[in-house]
Image (cartoon, rainbow, N blue to C red):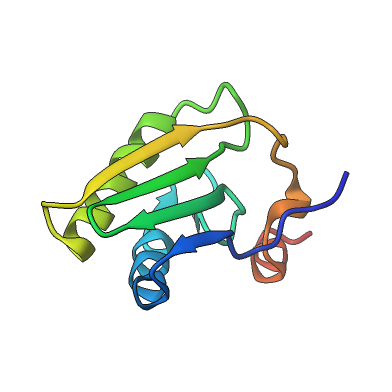
Length: 112
C-alpha cells in the first residue's frame, strides 16, 4: 500500500493554506502527544471562502479521543479564520492509518 505524504493534500486558495496548516499543527492527539498533521491523520483539506472541509482519520477506529480532536480542529480553525467560516470534519478510514503515514520527525519522536 502506498504511504500518504506527511503533509496533506490541499485544494483551495493557496494564500489560506499556511494559516490552515498552522492551525491544524496546533491540534495535538493527546494519546500520542504529537500534532495531527505530523501524525498523518489529515488526509485532505478543501478550502472555499466560507467553508473548510477536512478528511481526517484516527490511528484506530476505537480511538477514545476522536470527538475531542474534531472539536479541537473546529476551535483552532475558527480562531484562525473567524466565526463566519463553516468547518466540516469527516472521519474516513480508507486508506487505514499506519505508522508510515507519520512524518519522519514524528516517527523519530516515537522512537521508530
